[in-house]
Amino acid sequence: MEPAILLPPPRIMLFNLIHLPYWILLGLGVVLYLMVILSGGGDDDADLDGDVDLNGDAGIDVDSDFDLGQILGWFGFGKAPLILLLATDLSLWGVWGWFSNMVFIGVTGQIPGSFWTGLILALSLVMALVLGGLISQPIGKALAAFGEDASGDRLVGCVGTVSSALVPRVAEGRIGQVNVIDPARNLVNANAQIPQWARAVPKLGDKVLVIDRTGSTYLVILKDSPDQEQWLNPSRQN
Image 1 (cartoon, rainbow, N blue to C red):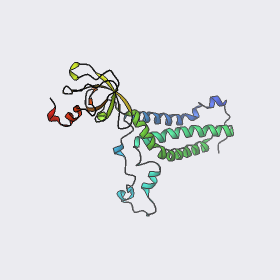
Image 2: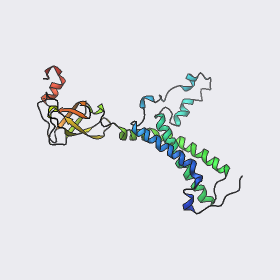
Image 3: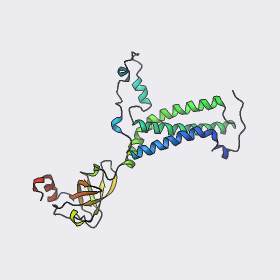
Image 4: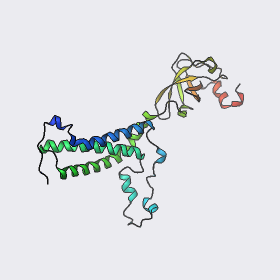
Protein backbone atom coordinates (compact mmCIF):
# COMPACT_ATOMS: atom_id res chain seq x y z
CA MET A 1 0.00 0.00 0.00
CA GLU A 2 1.27 3.43 -0.92
CA PRO A 3 2.22 5.83 1.88
CA ALA A 4 -0.40 8.40 2.81
CA ILE A 5 -0.10 11.96 1.59
CA LEU A 6 -0.50 14.92 3.93
CA LEU A 7 -3.46 17.15 3.23
CA PRO A 8 -4.09 20.85 2.66
CA PRO A 9 -6.94 22.49 4.68
CA PRO A 10 -10.42 20.85 4.31
CA ARG A 11 -11.96 23.78 2.46
CA ILE A 12 -9.28 23.42 -0.20
CA MET A 13 -9.71 19.64 -0.32
CA LEU A 14 -13.38 19.99 -1.21
CA PHE A 15 -12.34 21.19 -4.66
CA ASN A 16 -9.04 19.32 -4.91
CA LEU A 17 -8.13 17.77 -8.25
CA ILE A 18 -8.31 14.35 -6.64
CA HIS A 19 -12.06 14.63 -7.25
CA LEU A 20 -11.62 15.45 -10.96
CA PRO A 21 -12.82 12.04 -12.26
CA TYR A 22 -16.04 12.40 -10.26
CA TRP A 23 -16.57 15.97 -11.45
CA ILE A 24 -16.32 14.68 -15.03
CA LEU A 25 -18.81 11.88 -14.34
CA LEU A 26 -21.23 14.27 -12.69
CA GLY A 27 -20.88 16.75 -15.54
CA LEU A 28 -21.61 14.06 -18.13
CA GLY A 29 -24.67 13.01 -16.14
CA VAL A 30 -25.99 16.58 -16.05
CA VAL A 31 -25.49 16.95 -19.83
CA LEU A 32 -27.41 13.74 -20.45
CA TYR A 33 -30.18 14.92 -18.11
CA LEU A 34 -30.52 18.07 -20.20
CA MET A 35 -30.85 15.90 -23.29
CA VAL A 36 -33.54 13.85 -21.53
CA ILE A 37 -35.46 17.01 -20.60
CA LEU A 38 -35.31 18.34 -24.16
CA SER A 39 -36.49 15.00 -25.53
CA GLY A 40 -39.42 14.82 -23.11
CA GLY A 41 -38.13 12.29 -20.62
CA GLY A 42 -36.58 9.83 -23.02
CA ASP A 43 -37.97 7.49 -25.66
CA ASP A 44 -40.38 5.17 -23.88
CA ASP A 45 -40.92 3.20 -27.07
CA ALA A 46 -37.29 2.14 -26.95
CA ASP A 47 -37.68 0.48 -23.56
CA LEU A 48 -37.22 -3.25 -23.33
CA ASP A 49 -39.90 -5.42 -21.83
CA GLY A 50 -38.86 -6.24 -18.30
CA ASP A 51 -39.80 -9.89 -18.94
CA VAL A 52 -37.66 -10.24 -22.07
CA ASP A 53 -35.64 -13.45 -22.21
CA LEU A 54 -32.14 -12.16 -22.91
CA ASN A 55 -30.56 -15.55 -22.45
CA GLY A 56 -32.82 -17.19 -24.99
CA ASP A 57 -32.19 -14.51 -27.61
CA ALA A 58 -28.45 -14.87 -27.21
CA GLY A 59 -28.63 -18.62 -27.64
CA ILE A 60 -26.68 -19.22 -24.44
CA ASP A 61 -27.24 -22.48 -22.58
CA VAL A 62 -27.14 -21.45 -18.94
CA ASP A 63 -28.51 -22.83 -15.70
CA SER A 64 -32.20 -21.99 -15.22
CA ASP A 65 -31.40 -20.43 -11.85
CA PHE A 66 -29.33 -17.76 -13.61
CA ASP A 67 -31.55 -15.14 -15.20
CA LEU A 68 -29.47 -12.50 -16.96
CA GLY A 69 -32.55 -10.43 -17.75
CA GLN A 70 -33.52 -10.29 -14.09
CA ILE A 71 -30.02 -9.26 -13.04
CA LEU A 72 -29.94 -6.48 -15.62
CA GLY A 73 -33.41 -5.46 -14.45
CA TRP A 74 -32.03 -4.88 -10.96
CA PHE A 75 -29.81 -2.20 -12.47
CA GLY A 76 -32.69 -0.61 -14.37
CA PHE A 77 -32.06 -2.04 -17.85
CA GLY A 78 -35.31 -2.50 -19.73
CA LYS A 79 -37.27 -0.45 -17.18
CA ALA A 80 -36.22 3.09 -18.17
CA PRO A 81 -34.90 4.79 -21.32
CA LEU A 82 -31.22 3.99 -21.73
CA ILE A 83 -30.11 7.62 -21.92
CA LEU A 84 -31.97 8.39 -18.68
CA LEU A 85 -30.47 5.36 -16.98
CA LEU A 86 -26.99 6.40 -18.10
CA ALA A 87 -27.54 9.98 -16.94
CA THR A 88 -28.70 8.78 -13.53
CA ASP A 89 -25.85 6.29 -13.11
CA LEU A 90 -23.16 8.78 -14.12
CA SER A 91 -24.56 11.48 -11.84
CA LEU A 92 -24.81 9.12 -8.88
CA TRP A 93 -21.34 7.73 -9.57
CA GLY A 94 -19.91 11.24 -9.51
CA VAL A 95 -21.75 12.23 -6.33
CA TRP A 96 -21.01 8.99 -4.46
CA GLY A 97 -17.36 9.03 -5.47
CA TRP A 98 -16.90 12.64 -4.43
CA PHE A 99 -18.74 12.03 -1.15
CA SER A 100 -16.74 8.86 -0.42
CA ASN A 101 -13.47 10.65 -1.06
CA MET A 102 -14.41 13.39 1.38
CA VAL A 103 -15.51 10.86 4.02
CA PHE A 104 -12.22 8.99 3.68
CA ILE A 105 -10.25 12.22 3.96
CA GLY A 106 -12.31 13.37 6.93
CA VAL A 107 -11.88 10.07 8.80
CA THR A 108 -8.22 9.35 8.05
CA GLY A 109 -6.95 12.88 7.49
CA GLN A 110 -5.12 11.60 4.42
CA ILE A 111 -5.57 11.52 0.64
CA PRO A 112 -6.44 7.96 -0.44
CA GLY A 113 -3.64 6.04 -2.16
CA SER A 114 -4.02 3.92 -5.29
CA PHE A 115 -5.66 0.98 -3.51
CA TRP A 116 -8.29 3.08 -1.73
CA THR A 117 -8.88 5.21 -4.82
CA GLY A 118 -9.65 2.09 -6.86
CA LEU A 119 -11.85 0.66 -4.11
CA ILE A 120 -13.83 3.91 -3.78
CA LEU A 121 -14.23 4.05 -7.55
CA ALA A 122 -15.59 0.50 -7.69
CA LEU A 123 -17.88 0.77 -4.68
CA SER A 124 -19.33 4.08 -5.83
CA LEU A 125 -20.03 2.50 -9.25
CA VAL A 126 -21.92 -0.37 -7.63
CA MET A 127 -23.95 2.04 -5.49
CA ALA A 128 -24.71 4.17 -8.55
CA LEU A 129 -25.92 1.17 -10.57
CA VAL A 130 -28.18 -0.09 -7.78
CA LEU A 131 -29.68 3.29 -6.89
CA GLY A 132 -29.87 4.32 -10.55
CA GLY A 133 -31.98 1.28 -11.34
CA LEU A 134 -34.37 2.17 -8.52
CA ILE A 135 -34.89 5.86 -9.25
CA SER A 136 -34.35 6.31 -13.01
CA GLN A 137 -37.92 5.43 -13.97
CA PRO A 138 -39.69 7.87 -11.59
CA ILE A 139 -37.15 10.55 -12.50
CA GLY A 140 -37.96 10.03 -16.16
CA LYS A 141 -41.65 10.61 -15.53
CA ALA A 142 -40.86 13.80 -13.60
CA LEU A 143 -38.51 15.17 -16.27
CA ALA A 144 -40.98 14.39 -19.04
CA ALA A 145 -43.27 17.09 -17.69
CA PHE A 146 -40.53 19.71 -18.17
CA GLY A 147 -39.69 18.50 -21.65
CA GLU A 148 -43.18 18.59 -23.10
CA ASP A 149 -43.55 20.61 -26.30
CA ALA A 150 -46.16 23.26 -25.51
CA SER A 151 -46.88 23.75 -29.23
CA GLY A 152 -47.51 20.04 -29.90
CA ASP A 153 -50.72 18.35 -30.93
CA ARG A 154 -51.05 16.77 -27.51
CA LEU A 155 -53.50 19.52 -26.47
CA VAL A 156 -55.98 18.59 -29.18
CA GLY A 157 -58.99 17.01 -27.51
CA CYS A 158 -58.22 18.56 -24.12
CA VAL A 159 -60.51 20.88 -22.17
CA GLY A 160 -59.37 24.37 -21.20
CA THR A 161 -60.60 27.59 -19.60
CA VAL A 162 -60.61 30.98 -21.32
CA SER A 163 -58.19 33.33 -19.56
CA SER A 164 -58.62 36.36 -21.86
CA ALA A 165 -61.70 38.54 -22.31
CA LEU A 166 -62.85 36.35 -25.20
CA VAL A 167 -61.57 34.08 -27.97
CA PRO A 168 -61.88 35.77 -31.40
CA ARG A 169 -62.50 34.14 -34.78
CA VAL A 170 -59.66 33.25 -37.12
CA ALA A 171 -60.61 35.90 -39.68
CA GLU A 172 -60.34 38.69 -37.11
CA GLY A 173 -56.55 38.31 -36.98
CA ARG A 174 -56.50 38.40 -33.18
CA ILE A 175 -55.88 35.70 -30.60
CA GLY A 176 -57.23 34.85 -27.18
CA GLN A 177 -55.70 32.90 -24.33
CA VAL A 178 -56.81 29.62 -22.79
CA ASN A 179 -55.42 27.53 -19.93
CA VAL A 180 -55.41 23.85 -20.85
CA ILE A 181 -54.61 20.75 -18.80
CA ASP A 182 -52.62 18.40 -21.04
CA PRO A 183 -52.64 14.57 -20.80
CA ALA A 184 -49.62 14.72 -18.44
CA ARG A 185 -51.66 16.96 -16.08
CA ASN A 186 -49.53 20.03 -16.87
CA LEU A 187 -51.18 23.45 -17.03
CA VAL A 188 -50.42 25.04 -20.42
CA ASN A 189 -51.30 28.59 -21.46
CA ALA A 190 -51.97 28.60 -25.20
CA ASN A 191 -52.99 31.03 -27.92
CA ALA A 192 -56.46 30.30 -29.21
CA GLN A 193 -59.03 31.24 -31.86
CA ILE A 194 -62.41 29.85 -32.82
CA PRO A 195 -63.16 28.59 -36.35
CA GLN A 196 -65.23 30.70 -38.74
CA TRP A 197 -68.21 28.36 -38.56
CA ALA A 198 -68.45 28.58 -34.77
CA ARG A 199 -71.39 30.63 -33.49
CA ALA A 200 -70.68 30.81 -29.76
CA VAL A 201 -67.86 33.11 -28.71
CA PRO A 202 -66.16 31.79 -25.56
CA LYS A 203 -65.63 34.45 -22.91
CA LEU A 204 -63.52 34.72 -19.78
CA GLY A 205 -63.99 31.68 -17.55
CA ASP A 206 -65.84 29.59 -20.15
CA LYS A 207 -64.84 25.98 -20.75
CA VAL A 208 -63.57 25.25 -24.26
CA LEU A 209 -62.58 22.15 -26.21
CA VAL A 210 -59.37 22.19 -28.25
CA ILE A 211 -60.16 20.76 -31.70
CA ASP A 212 -57.15 21.58 -33.88
CA ARG A 213 -53.85 23.44 -34.14
CA THR A 214 -52.61 25.85 -36.81
CA GLY A 215 -49.02 26.92 -36.27
CA SER A 216 -48.69 28.17 -32.72
CA THR A 217 -52.43 28.81 -32.31
CA TYR A 218 -55.11 26.34 -31.28
CA LEU A 219 -58.66 26.22 -32.57
CA VAL A 220 -61.19 25.88 -29.77
CA ILE A 221 -64.97 25.77 -29.44
CA LEU A 222 -67.26 26.36 -26.50
CA LYS A 223 -67.67 23.12 -24.58
CA ASP A 224 -71.12 21.51 -24.44
CA SER A 225 -72.48 23.96 -26.98
CA PRO A 226 -74.19 23.53 -30.38
CA ASP A 227 -70.76 24.21 -31.88
CA GLN A 228 -69.45 21.02 -30.28
CA GLU A 229 -72.31 19.06 -31.83
CA GLN A 230 -71.59 20.71 -35.16
CA TRP A 231 -67.90 19.81 -34.88
CA LEU A 232 -68.86 16.19 -34.31
CA ASN A 233 -70.91 16.36 -37.52
CA PRO A 234 -68.57 18.02 -40.08
CA SER A 235 -71.26 18.03 -42.80
CA ARG A 236 -73.11 20.71 -40.83
CA GLN A 237 -70.16 23.12 -40.77
CA ASN A 238 -70.45 26.15 -43.06
